[in-house]
View 1 (cartoon, each protein chain N blue to C red):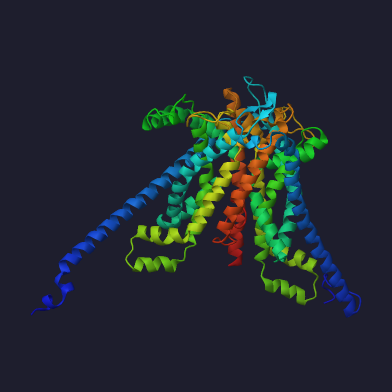
View 2: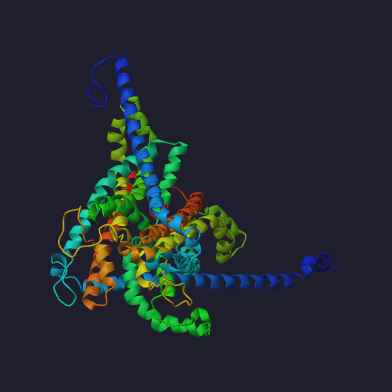
Length: 327
Length: 300
């Protein structure tokens, strides 16, 4: 016993106990301080943004959220244009990502041959780690020219010449931003949906098969309904990523402070306007207004993430990629 | 009276067979079509992801030569430029971020693993939500806290933002790793009269080490590729700079700033830098996976 370095060598039993008690209290206290510091950091984060944004909120009032004029020189600043831009790009991305993500997740959890599932599953998880700036570079230099030549005319022909597909087909713009976001959030969507789909108990699946259900009927009527909450959570989490994505969107959206009149028109999102104008904001209220945009973005992102985490947590186990906070 | 006439079901046997067979055909047909659609979706999902890697590797590799890694950037049109300052800058920024975030994150992870109360689960949830916060808002936090106080852009302000980005990954991964340590080991230590802090140092941390390394590598991978928070913290630098209190260049900034230029040689260096980033991050992610796989093997 006395050779054990963790037990004090001298003193009576009471002395030992006292040393232990003091030491344990210090240890727990140290851990508590670290946790407290983390909470303080979070509070400092939110309050510093709120303080810096308050001049803009105070000056423009509700008009900041409902106004569409963004004129820093004359201090007429309304952020609705960017709120709409964020919602539209996110919508395009999710319309593509949800069905394709669920289909792919079904393949990777139940349909594909076992070896392929493992290989593709790992590949998808690794792709989720590719930095967004790389997606942006690829979107701008490779996808944009391709979209201009092949996708834009095709969609314009498909919908006739209604106003949502009118205007110049530049490649860069709302549609491209949506497509690039779709590609970006797909790995997240697939990886989490696959985890929750794979977690459906085998007994339920076997019971359905024993009743004579086809493979699709098992997936459609048993597996997907069982994993519904988790899939909703995965979609919400992917949506959170799409809402807050900055650099990839900034590179491909065209950065125009106008509510896009067409699917092909250049636009601006909350994140991209901050990235574009932050270091150039010298006019009064401009910087504060940009931080106010960030506050709105943060509020939306936190709300979406709280909902997503609650949904995913209710179904997924700690060991999954979600549990360790990777995705 | 025959059996057929007595039993109405038996009498309609052929009809029932026909209905069952057609229902089965219909259901099997639907199943086949639906599975084909899923397969199509898998292909649609894989094509852009494969194309992304093909372009990054193809275009990036052609930008790689010795000068690319050892020289400073040159103006557009002048050949022989490199990204040495961005490599050094990224190492400094990420290094400082890691030096702060790793110990802090691990201690918080340990605290969460040792606690089971309401407060602990609140902090855990906050860490999860922090993982989904748009990185650009953390850049603004670093700007408000450090750039405005110091009066100029700097590498440390970027490190601060990236450190916060790494925190949730490290906290949650390390907590999971700490929790896998068998309770019997901890109780064994307690029964020998060991102090909590010795148990943490001699039992919990060594046993959880592979999981901790995984978490740290994933956190680094997340921070190394982030661009948005660097835009108004590190801001970029055309020269060789190693002082973290001054503006620094970084790899993701090169990809962004050169990628949006119209000059082919700047775009080329953006591709080369993108490849370097992807290689670096895949290296970290695969490394973390190998550590995790090794952990699984040892446990078994």
